[in-house]
Image (cartoon, rainbow, N blue to C red):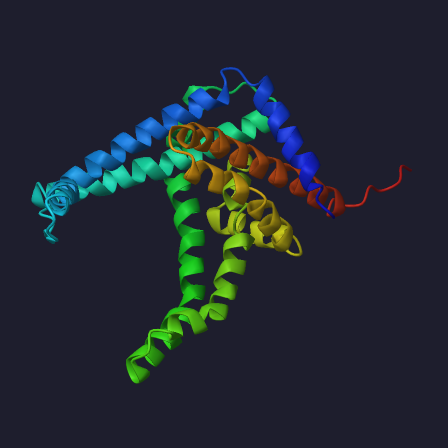
Length: 266
């Protein structure tokens, strides 16, 4: 199946225009919530205070490294982990929201918190693909680290980059797992990951090209000062809704091609 990238993106923009409330405000709310969580996490870890001290010393013309001092000991670390889990749940909630926009279903701010309803499954469907990708990345990490130790040359970091290709391919193979989990509450996360790999066979390059088509928006957001921040919020929804459309289109085609044959009537 050849994916019509332009049609996919134009359909995503049309779905966003029709959505109420405006997806920009939902994405802004998500951004503010995750920013608050990040600031709180950095404060607990002591990194925020350390960064502030280093910036003040840099402004005075000196370079000073300050070791972060975590707050609260074990309790503080537990709270940090809890905040990281909250952020993970919100990212899955954003996928739920984007999928509902694409399907022209009722969608709103509350959707970004819906992943808490599938709390452990949402965590596992994020961690499992990451674990597999990390294992594939050892094909790069192990030999490159060994060569750097043996030769003392850091240019092996660049020379060994082709060894990362299997890890990148694995990442694209598992990209649909979260959508499959959301559409199939009774399926196990291992099943969702396996099905994602099956559905994505022969389509990883198409998804890579789709990702690269947003590169211009990302550069524009980075180059413009205040307008860039506003643009980045809008683009975050645009990317997610288009990704949901890629999944929906590909899965519909996959199910049609793999549906059991209809037996003729007697």
